[in-house]
Amino acid sequence: MPSEVIGKRITCYTVLCLNNLKKTMKKYSLTHKILFAMLIGIFLGSFANFYLTDDSFIQTYLIDGLLFIVGKLYINSLKMMVVPLVFVSLVNGITSLADISTLGRMSFRSILLYMTTTAIAISIALILALIINPGKNTEAPASTNFIEKDAPSLAETIINIVPQNPVQAMASAEMLQIIFFAILFGLAISLTKDKSRPVLDFFQALDQVVMKMVEIVMQLAPYGVFALITTTFASQGFDLIGKLLAYFLTLAFALAIHASVTYSVFLVFLAKVNPLIFFRKIREVALFAFSTASSGATIPVTLRVVEKKLGVKNSIASFTVPLGATINMDGTAMMQGVATVFIANVYQIDLTVTDYLMVILTATLASVGTAAVPGVGLITLALVLKQVGLPVEGIGLIIGIDRLLDMMRTAVNVTGDSMVTCVIARSEKSLDDKVFKSR
Image 1 (cartoon, one colour):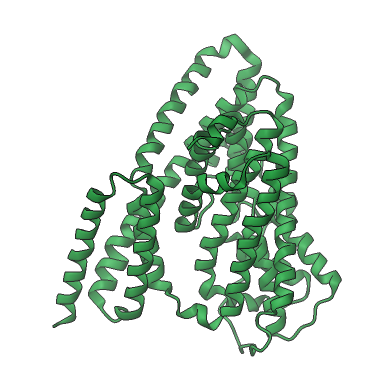
Image 2: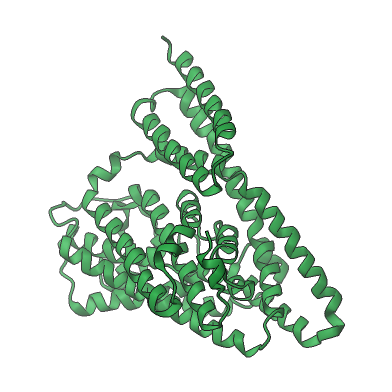
């Protein structure tokens, strides 16, 4: 049978599956729908990667055509919601604070917690990597494909927090600048009191409208996740993992330990909540983050879940979640720790204890210093490698499987955002235990 006929039949079968998926999954929760869509996407994408790479019809019209378009449309729809949701929610959150001094205290605690978890994350990754020693018997290649990009200095990042043009900041989705302007705008409304009542009423009504838009977009989640996962595994597959299996498994194991152990400790002793309930309720957030590989695009989902399912007040969540999506890089820091050991082993370069301490310090500070830079993981890794005298070209060794690992890292990052949000909410007595414990 000709490959074009097979391709057309598979395309029709995929469309039929999507239609049946819509009919049969109405009785399931959104989280279950997303999980099913993800599993189906992994299966179909892997199948296409193994058996249909030479089928031009499948690759051109289904993988790079229909599914690519659907996935991109869904990512764009999520990103479309980020700026209005963050700005409106944060303005409402600031105006609802009974004591303005709460903002300063909350800011300090949030940043301290995010940097603490990042330091712990990279420490775990380094210890595990030193035990497993990935890349120990791997020969260094003659050359690798990696183009280094310069990262802004910490001073530049701090200066850029204040927007010269808030409208331009919103158009460019510069999250730190949006957070700064929203805080200033909310404070101004609070300080003008009765005179600004019409403005406050407008933002409260606008918040309801934006949340309804988020709910509409969320209903399309299973289809967007299915398209994203299918195209990712169709292009990546699992063949690259075999070549870097030790590196892949070391980082995956480190991420699992940090998410399950470190976050649980914080939840038990600081947030005083049951970690099992927490992890069960944020499955939706983790699945979204895994499929999109973007903490920023997951902000609408994270905000919705921490408020509606975990019981965090909007005044807390609207600040900690966008801030975490911008500066919290636990997963990225772990990648830098494992990658440092891996590259050092490949190039047979011995690192000292001082070097490893420098890796922890550099990666932790870089999580804030390069927060708004696209491709931040590889950029901060370049900074870390330079700091300890390792060849930056070594990054080219891990680029091939970085997409799959990036999906895992992002899931850990948003889990950390949610955890810190619960801790801060508990410290400010803004965590509703009834909502958190409800089914």
